[in-house]
Amino acid sequence: MEPNTGITFDDVAGVDEAKQDFQEIVEFLKTPEKFAAVGARIPKGVLLVGPPGTGKTLLAKAIAGEAGVPFFSLSGSEFIEMFVGVGASRVRDLFNKAKANSQCLVFIDEIDAVGRQRGTGIGGGNDEREQTLNQLLTEMDGFSGNSGVIVIAATNRPEILDQALPRPGRFDRQVSVGLPDVRGREEILQVHSKNKKLDKDVSLSVIAMRTPGFSGADLANLMNEAAILAGRRGKDTITSKEIDDSIDRIVAGMEGTKMTDGKNKILVAYHEIGHAICATLTPGHDPVQKVTLIPRGQARGLTWFLPGEDPSLISKHQLFARIVGGLGGRAAEEVIFGEPENTTGAAGDLLQITQIARQMVTMFGMSEIGPWALTDPAVQAGDVVLRMLARNSMSEKLAEDIDTSVHKIIDNAYEVAKTHIRNNREAMDKLVELLVDKETITGDEFRAILSEFTDIPSENVNRKSIRELIEA
View 1 (spheres, rainbow, N blue to C red):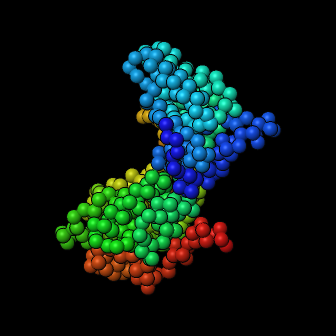
View 2 (view 1 turned 45 degrees about the vertical axis):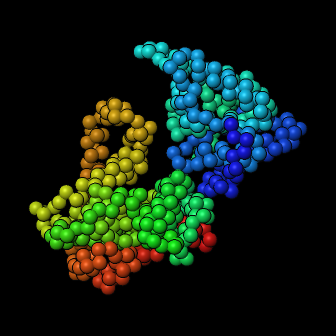
């Protein structure tokens, strides 16, 4: 039990919707008589659902901190013991302590460890887990909503919870804590950069744009990595260079040994410039942020793009542009060196673009087959056996049509990519020469040289960020 968590809503950013939901609970814990006067009953329990690292535990601590009430916290796995009946006994003890200390807040992390769907007893079951769950269900039903005890549970696997657990009367509310959008990421970065010395050239909004899909924990780790890097380099402040290197390290892996083999270096340079040219000249693609020959992880070189907006709603032509950009490396190898010189370097690109093309056909209805979903997302996210069963339940004709449509999208994109490479050979040679010499070129340097030889689609140069669009 923590008598005071020391965390308030000011320490939590990027989850404004969830914070609004919890303001009511804080108000109830402070002034319960205001709600009781109108016959309102505060929720007994709140279930927090969201991916790992989004701030579910932090939110629960912030509620207790804001309300100034004791905070009981434990993990679902702590209830489970080898001996039958111990878990149920622990549940009873927990709720007895909570009632003795009301007003208070009980937080159960990873509740799926104890709240998993109960079995039928066939094939052997975990008697201890089921008895513990039954006791938890009974206890949550047994105390009244106005007793001053509020249970908050967190999970990132809501689909496996027993149906009796999240129903109203036990967990009256289910609050989604998702990955933050670009504005949320900027607010989270502000929280985690309070105690760090940032150089004046560091823009948190640009960092937020560069990190789509990052959770709060990822962003905290990013700022810490940047601080460690600045300390290692003997700097007084964290500069944009440390931030960029930290993003690269988190996304792509550790920096490898620089290439010394002239032939391989030139081949990788043509491959990466191929990505950059095909992406830049295809309307709808994100602008190039930098191109580098410094190896990271399994990649011998990398082309980075700066997302202009959060990738939550993507159009068909944007997806097609990503496939064209992804095929730019292989197209450059084939056009410049000939088909026999194609390398294994495009393996990751091919895997990625095939996945996008298949999703266009089977999930997004963006092919000649028609606007209907051909796969269940729940099955796709499930295990291999479910996916095999789904494939077997599909007619042979439909499976063949899907494969044909995927093939057609990729073939069309590959022709576009090869056309871009053939039409911009002179610009490509100049860019490769610069890249081999400098090893890293920025997006602005790349576009300045490319624009000398051809026109660049305007939306791929200065695409407005979400913030600019909202302000406009």
